[in-house]
Amino acid sequence: MVVILKNNPDEAQLQSLIHWLETKNIQVTQSLGESNHILGLIGDTSRIDMDLIGALDIVESVRRIQEPYKKANRKFHPDDTVITVKGTTIGNGELALIAGPGAVENDEQMLQIAQAVKAAGATILRGGAFIGRSSPYSFQGLGKEGLDALVKAGIATGMPVISEIMRISQLDYFKDVDIIQVGARNMKNFDLLKELGKSDKPILLKRGLSATYEELLMSAEYVMSQGNTNVILCERGIRTFETYTTNTFDISTIPVLKSLSHLPVVADPCHASGRAALVAPLAAASVAAGADGLMIEVHPDPTHALSDAKQQISPAAFADLAETLKTIRNTVKPQ
Image 1 (tube, rainbow, N blue to C red):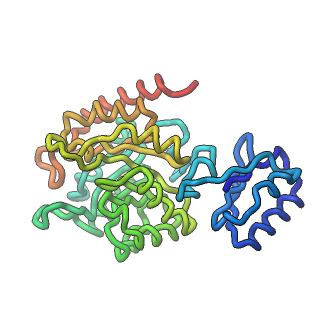
Image 2 (image 1 turned 135 degrees about the vertical axis):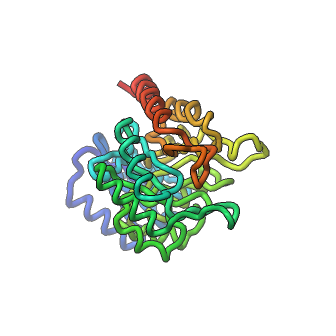
Image 3 (image 1 turned 180 degrees about the vertical axis):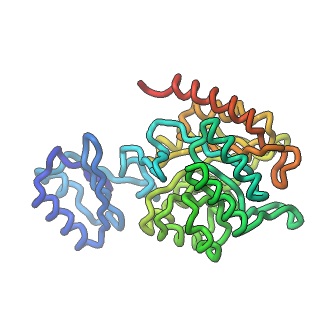
């Protein structure tokens, strides 16, 4: 249930209403936007009299919400959530470019890529240290050593860093990582999501291989229910009958999620396609559809990358792409 308050509600009446709701075992969250003040009621609201609340002097209107996700729901939080990490923002109308190698291979490689992508306009540095692969014989990442190299490159270039966590036991390794990524295979690892919900770090949550929009938002709800509201949603393609691409990129995810939720939405065209030649057109389509950011895999020598070689692009290609994406964003951005 959502209670929309009138402008400048009487504070004493507001606190009295909140106290009364809490005695009914209703959790109340407040969202104060530029033009409205909203109370989100979470719990069993079936016994709450809408007319009784609507009759109060401070109340403009009352609505019941049917969706099971509450904290991630735009109806509870009309204004876009903006996440800021070390001066870099995601969700503020600008385009966040998250770039770096699919896998950290060594200190030199990581620093070389970090310097190149920053010069091209990247705002966040990515790098895989713990890598889930379909084959147990494929390169699985350098683990903590890889995270250390990523963090050092981030410090050297002044960029916040992001990397993927695979399980709860790795959490201590991520103390210097600025954004924690949850991969598609872990989107329904609810124990991990709840533990990350106790963290103060932003969480980038990738859509599962066959997850619906609601399932993705419910996974975000797991994180947010524990107190961490800094969640970024990521479309990275879904599993269909098509085999030409690694996955099928669902471009409609971007406008749909932005209509259903206030959380930032980014796209990963590399994992969506699995083909370097498709990264640029899919990235351009994502920006045109309203994405708040993009995750791009960049490697100095893609053909010899230890992980996902076919979907990574060169620093030069990334620099050209970044310019194109900025032009598209300036074109479609509301004035």
